[in-house]
Length: 446
Ligand SMILES: Cc1cc2nc3c(=O)[nH]c(=O)nc-3n(C[C@H](O)[C@H](O)[C@H](O)COP(=O)(O)O)c2cc1C
Image 1 (tube, rainbow, N blue to C red):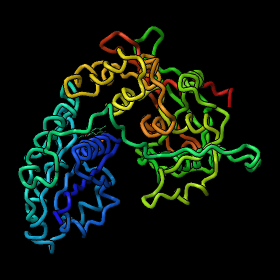
Image 2: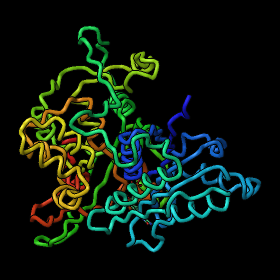
Image 3: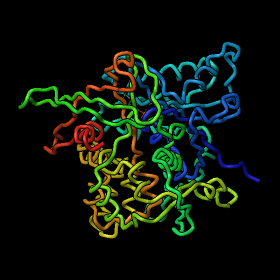
Image 4: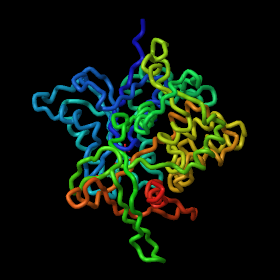
């Protein structure tokens, strides 16, 4: 019997999702070349088993002022233990890809210190670390694409078993598309518990089911706030719009200290949600549960069935950012598969290819095109909802510094917020989702 094909472990640590996206891309590209890959977050990985891995690709971002993502902290503490010794990882080969921004003083600090520590622990580097930079004309992908090609060819030289057909043989996108990772179950309405749910339960239910891993633990809101004041601080005619907002706690009061931040979950424009639902030919009134696809033994995940259903429209409103965040490159790849008009398919395939990367960056990220806008630009594409649930960026809560003190204003939170708006290179006006939503609220509305 011949040797088994080799397996690649991709370990990632991400604060806002880019490193997760890059890790998934590395995993997909490896699998398309015939190498199986598992993609695991550093906080879900048993650190003590690292010496048993043969080849590990680390994908880590840097946040704060040179800080590591939250999901990296325990893993890093483990690696720093003195007793591990300089031979602990002697059988492990590794490669590090960092995501950062060279505008920061501690550029890609986490990737650099991880690379050094792995080497000190005896691991052997497969290729020199790659440093993705937000300042690059096509973002971190500008470095990731060539770095991956070098990774595949070096791995192949180390052991051809990684890529049985060679490092450059890819299964064509036209022949096969990956399976979506999630499945949707549609429920009969009459079977549902008619009891009305509290709003916090609905939010928890929707966000708990959503694939947006980054907010899994915090799916239930800590409290609800009611706006009591919305005052413009800037002079009439000023180019800036800065507001003073006051909120009253309507559920439990949360204790906070001076310097704390509050995270607000914004509401999306209702007519845009309706337009998205119509564009994707969805039934807003249907009740759904969302869960991982069949487990490995091909059964439906039991946990998913016990989830309580939620209205499709509510699920979209609370979890899927269809109006402000830009889709990732993989979205264009999946769209190309579902495009029925030849010219659209061609353009989408170009966008998803390494040659089209810079044009995609200009069309998509620089213009901050939303999912809805992109779908409207490619009318022949009809993507199944499972894919949309997986690929539409998760709706994130936004953090604001609190400008009040509970000592002076019990049961209140005050914020001073600049209402974000900017002009894109193609002269389109874009607005910050959360700040413009806050500005649009009127205290009398409750
Ligand atoms: C609040 C914030 C702080 C950041 N701090 C740094 C930093 O200190 N050094 C750096 O190289 N990049 C820094 N970056 C850039 C991020 O590393 C970069 O945007 C990366 O793509 C984020 O990846 P993630 O979404 O996986 O966390 C920062 C980004 C943000 C939003």
